[in-house]
Amino acid sequence: MNEPLKIGDPADAIAAVPYLLGFHPADSLVCLAFGGPRTACAVRQDLPDVDEQTAPVLARNGFEQAIVLGYGPPDRADDAAHALAAALDRHDIKVIDILRVLDDRWWRLGCPDETCCPPTGRPLDTRAARVTAEAVYAGHVALSDRADLARTIAPVDGPAAAAMRAATRRAEDRLAALARAPSAPDPPSTPTILTTEGIPFVTHLLDRYSTDRNPPTDDETAWLGLLLTSLPVRDEAWEHANNTPADHLQLWRNTTRRVAPHYAAAPASLLAYTAYLIGDGALANLALDRALTAAPSYSMAALLREIIALGIPPSETQARVARHF
Image (cartoon, rainbow, N blue to C red; front, side, top):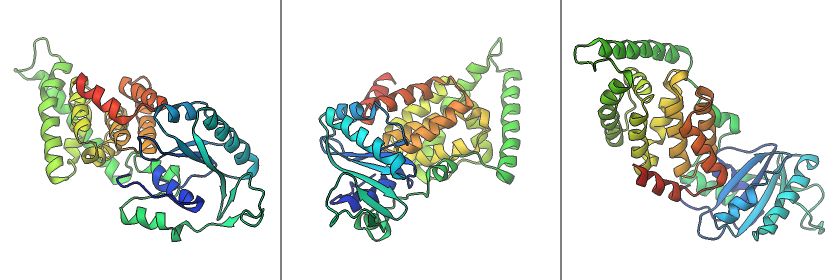
């Protein structure tokens, strides 16, 4: 998020989580971590299991305090929330609160005072919360659930999909024609053609997008998807993403949606990288799902998944990528 949200009480924390995740969690365990050298982050996992890596990753990244929130009924949320809190404590992260959220009520777990923590919970209306107003004013969006977020990068369908199939056929015919041209390498080399054609095309397209924000046409998108199968071309796009990730997020989201599914690995990985750099871990992981569905052993996607799982800060990864290029 561009501006840190100010969290003053449990209701603020509950209101902030959907905007940090990008969607409203359900049947989830969320750790809202803050303090130390980094801004707040929210780490989500499915109930009822507890990811043993959450606490050490947060500690390694310098977080000093946390709020644990279980989203679900007590038989699924309570034990998991207490287990995560204990793990955080073992890694010297101070747990400020352990909360359970279910429907329109919330509970502070372990609180014996029924005056402030009635057994029936306390009413919850995040729409009226100050944090919600701040987030909406800043332009942040919280979708209804994770599936809604996944749909924002799902392949296009209907007439848009038909148009892209036709554009993909034209792109593949274009590559075949280049391989047959008198100027083609001898012997014809598709990787060489892709690199020769792709690097100037990607550079021009990304520079143009940074200026006018107009999405590529169907034919440009199909040609881009094909060109990105060349690793040097993909690396050229990767370098550009490293420089201005926020500028390119929507471009790679649209490209991931529009390219033929078998060409999605590279643009989805570039989307994951840009999302990771701006702190949108939920979108980054969903984009990696798309990339690895298209190509289960795609190296860039596998590398990014490991980096995110280890909790390596975006600034550190960005510096390493810049040195590589």
